[in-house]
Structure formats: C-alpha cells, structure tokens
Picture 1 (spheres, rainbow, N blue to C red):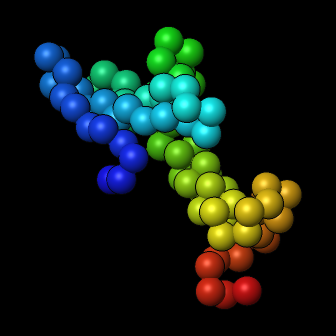
Picture 2: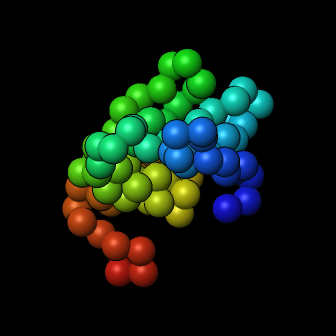
Amino acid sequence: MTGIHWRTTERGYLVGEFRDIDGEPGIISQVHDYPSVYLGRDGDPVCVSRDQARLLGSLLTAFADTGDLREAVDLVALGVKKGAE
C-alpha cells in the first residue's frame, strides 16, 4: 500500500507505519492474537474491533468520496453505497 511501510515484528505481528496529515508518525497493527487492530499515533493508539473497523471503513470510504464528514455520516447512516446514490 502506498504511503504505508509494512514490517513484521520479532513476535510475528504485522505493523504498518505511516505519516499523518501533520507529518506525525502513525501506526496500524494487529492486537496480539485478538481480532482487533491498533490504529493511531505510536504510543497513543486506539484499539478497534472488527465491527468497529467495518463501520470506520465505511465512514472513511464515504469521506474519501465526498470530502465532508457530515455527508459521509449521513450516507453511511442511510446505507447508501458508492455508485448507488
């Protein structure tokens, strides 16, 4: 994936490192053997479950399409899929 540097830790976990919009380092990594991921800045991540990841994925995709968070929330709440509007 462009903009994300992927590496595997000594314990075998996949970690993606990237820079946020301010140039600050960010990470995405799996939480041990649980079906969840850390997402955020190094040292201050948020733990996201699979269900939360689905919702956030939908919101982020809608935001990427519209450029407006309120519109993205409305589209996701209405269950509108890309190309179906």
